[in-house]
Length: 344
Image (cartoon, rainbow, N blue to C red; front, side, top):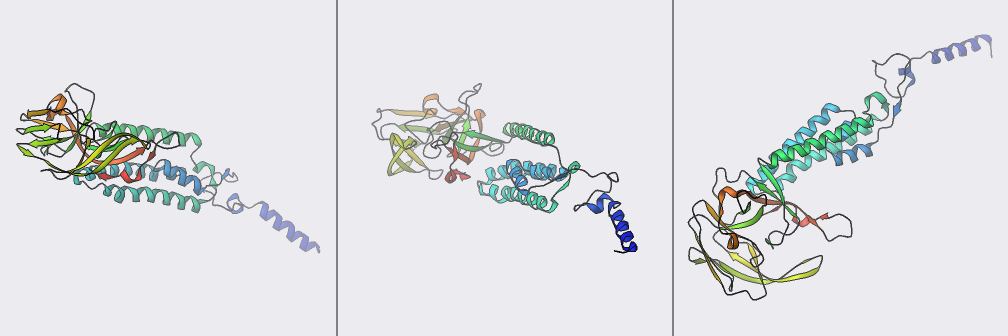
């Protein structure tokens, strides 16, 4: 090699060594960083963006460093969830929840994954450190809990069914959405399923069906299981046997009936055992309601405590939000898909 060639190689080597960091790096370096200083690189994984989006909406955007977008997605999701659930409770169509809320969550997840794939490695200063992720999750959880308390005390309430008194309509571990605003401008109707307090100062809440309203005369024949409203019998038609039990173990045999009631049709249960021969009469005062469980022979209701003041009504049960199955081999219950977003 000639002396001129060696000199050219030496010059080229010097040129390469003198190149600024932004030209050496395969990924773009922010112009604002000090010259000659290369920040630590980080592999941005779409998998973690997806996992975080599934765990908490907006977290995937936060992982990508999109702080403002993460906050806006979180706020929109919380507001939209309350509005859509309230609309579903008012209209009686819980499917609107899946139509509006599910696409937002899907958008947040897909957008986070696509952004994470497009970004690749980038400078450490643009990635929130682990403690900022902890701050985000804690703040989001506190806001979720605070929002739940605020909504539960004013607009909507989620109530878990603890007993079998409303079988076959409601079963243990159903979670129902209760519309607290249902009777602000509308009267209580026969056939409504309501959550109420048995006493004015009670912290206990029951859930039963309204069968009588103010000025109604209610009569119940415990032997025949016939309900009379204003001297008119509520017709019931035998469907067949019904077995109630936990995890496949039959604990009680019932007879399933369909009602042809003034408020529409619903199903009720009678025990297969003979009941005492009793006839009950009640005159429902104005401003009161008479409530009964759909599981007629296994329900503590107005037959024992009398008519309930409408002031004690917490709200109207609109639909089953979700339901949990206790009969699993896992240490935690699993959702019952067939009872999710079910209209009452």
